Amino acid sequence: MPKCKSPLFSEIRGAFKNIDVRVHRGVIEISKFRWPSNPRTEAQQKIRKRYGQLVEQWRALSDEEKAEYEAQAKPLKISGWNYFLATNWVMIVGLDLIAEVEATETCTSLEISGLDINTHKFYLLVWTLKNGGGQNMDYYLFINDDENLSNYSFRALIASDKGVSTNYYGKPTFGWAEVGNAESGFGIMILDANGNVRTNTYVQRLMGEDLNVVHRTIVKETTENNITKIKIKAQYTNGIAQGSKIQVYGYKPS
Image 1 (spheres, one colour):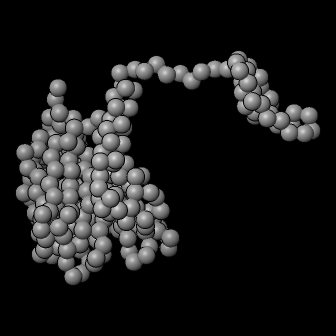
Image 2: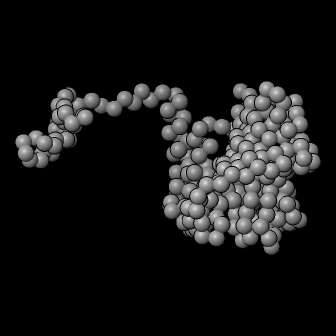
Image 3: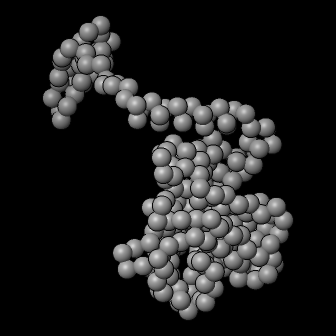
């Protein structure tokens, strides 16, 4: 029901039966109650169905699996459910899972082949890279078996509690993880009109107790006419720990 404060109607808000009372830009407005629009379009129903599927997946997780999400969410000061939703949000927007690979043991690289960006139009990459070595680790992004570092470049914008910094290097640095930590993120990969592969990424990582937010742009300076294979390779041997994972999403032709 309406709520009022003195002096007379200095504040009023709420609803009573078919009457809606609100304050808009300091003016009290009273009108017939307006039901929110809910056209239940096909697109709306698809999104709601996918969200419901994520809820069911979360409920089906074991206590141990939920505890793992809670542990990863803690440094970000969010709940385990919110972290689960953030890492699976691509399901909601309706992209197709094109490929997925997970490290079942410590390794040096993760490869995904059988891609075709000319068909899929672009790729959304979602990953977690866990440092499997005894030192801080760069992770490189290679396209179509080209592992010549000089054929790539990257720019980075890094924000933390200590300030903002920028980096530029002539190599395809896709990720970086401190010893004993991991980096999780997502990025969009395209093949531009000039034949250059461009990947723009957004990541979060821990450096000690500090949370870093990093935006990177990785460019393959030599041209390609398609993207059929990508490889994430650690700077040093066995730098990718078990449980590291990369997923590639896109649009499959109908």
